[in-house]
Each structure stands twice: as structure tokens, then as C-alpha cells.
Image (cartoon, rainbow, N blue to C red; front, side, top):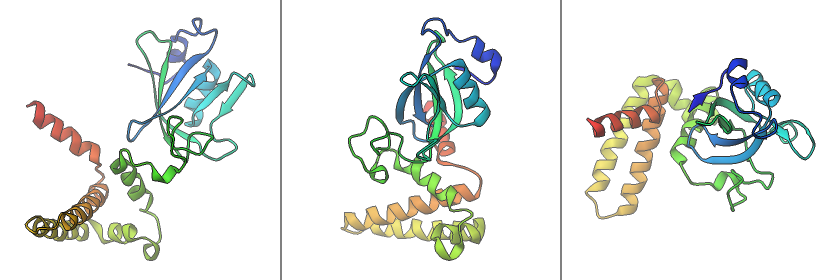
Length: 211
């Protein structure tokens, strides 16, 4: 794919094929879910790059449309890529709320509960953990953990690891699943405290797999 980062990149796109508009596939930057399909003009894409929020071109209204300008459910722009023919763009973004006007997380969901979407939950949990960094410690367990620093969190991860191992030799699957969930959560907090994320762990696993 071809990165679109400036006016020169915009000019290189094939705007003639779609009479000045290109289809734009919007993908979640953290968990790769396809969120929606919209259309962009050169001006709307330029505005997106400037604002770092996704701006479309509304074909029905014939004007620029910044996603979330009325609902507040904006799409924070992360990156724009063009396909090999330069006539379609892939926009990677982070949504501030439900993407679909029906209230679902994506325009391809049937469930209208944004918070109930279960796919790629670990990536969503990472985002929640990051958002708790500046929360009052008395209101957030995650904030209290982060305030303890790497040493305190590492100790907690060690404790959860032992509890997970003990649960594994018991006859109760429910206990093992519960302790494993605690371990994974605290490990994500530890990674965050060190400025790392789950993607860095995935890359290491991929490297080992291909070695």
C-alpha cells in the first residue's frame, strides 16, 4: 500500500476514475475491524490530514462532512493508505464511540450495543488501560496500579502468575479462566507502564515463529 501524507501524495491519486471521489474503507487502527465505507474528495482528505480527524464528502448533500461533527463520535485519523491502483483509500482510525448511525460499533454489526462488541477485546482493553493513566487513583484500580510504577505492577504480575499456575492444577476450569484473565490484564498494565503494547509481543512471537 502507498502512504498518503501530503498534498503531493494526494495529487498522485486517481481522482478522474471516480469523478473526483474515491471510496474510503475505514479500519480500526487497534484491532483491524472494518468500521465503515465512505467517500472522500481531494479536499476532504486534505482536511483529514490537517485535522487528524476523518472528513468525508457527502454525496447526498454535496459537501464535506466531518464524521462525528454532530454526535461527537469522531474518527481520530491514524494513517491513510492507497491501494495499488490509487483509486481506493484505506483509512486507519480510532473511533470515539459507535461508528454507525444505528448505534453499533461498526456499520457491519447487528448488535446495537457498542460496549458489547467482543471481537479483539484485548486491543480495546489496552485502549481503556491507557485512558486510565490520568484518572484519579481513588476512582480507578488501573490508575492505582500505574501509580505504583513498574516495580509494583511487576510484583502483582508475579502474584497473578502463581495463582494461575495453582488454578491450573486444580479440577476447576472456571478458576483457571478467572486467574488467567487476571494475569493477562495485569500483564497489559505492566506493558503500558513500560511504554510497550500487545503488538510488540505479537511481533516477537511472529519473529520466533518464522525463525
